[in-house]
Amino acid sequence: MAAEVFGESLDRAVRYVELLSTAGVERGLIGPRETDRLWDRHLLNCAVLAEVVPVGVTVVDVGSGAGLPGVPLALVRPDLRVVFLEPMERRTVFLREVVAALDGADRMSVLRGRAPDIGVGKDGLRWDVAVARAVAPLERLGGMLLPVVRPGGVMLAMRGSRVDEELAEARDGLRSQGWRDLRVLMCGKDRLAEPTRLVSAKRATDGAGRPGVGDRHDGRQREQQRGQTTREQRRARGRTCST
Figure: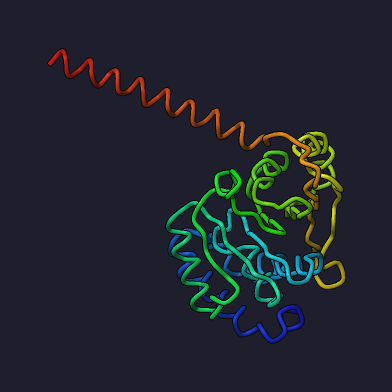
């Protein structure tokens, strides 16, 4: 099945699996118990996203981690330009090594940062399609991805077996953020024992929406951190004076 899905890129997919099962495990990016199921649970599960990604678009893989789903998608679809967006330095180092090992620098790149920050302002970066796997609850994820998707662009969020319930719970929140055409997609139905489930949504083109749940959560978190820092500074000054 891997040969069928990856075609001419199979050798590079094999190389990627080797990197995941060695350096990926050693650096804590992949659990050691996952090595026996890298093909079916990870690579093939991600590669079938190619069925629903339009031709020739730009793609950002948000919270890419070890490169899933972005690397398998880029291997299957050489027409795509894929950016791996990841905030953690050790993960970006691994991702750059992956890009080099797969000779993918012409259509894969690594960017360190967080989605809400990267897309802010008139000079913010935006892509045609944003993909994400196991990043955040659905409504919060919508708030994170909205800034990095151009108006009219698409969010593809990989979800689990509860995808219909998750979408029902998050639908109103996603619509208020500015997402439209919300639906569940199934990829790999005829090729995988367990199809890949996605929530697909299109960003409104009329400027509708508001800051997402993820942005509000991060804002509260930053306020709490600033408050904690201020309290610690006051305590430190008190200790210095008493000394």
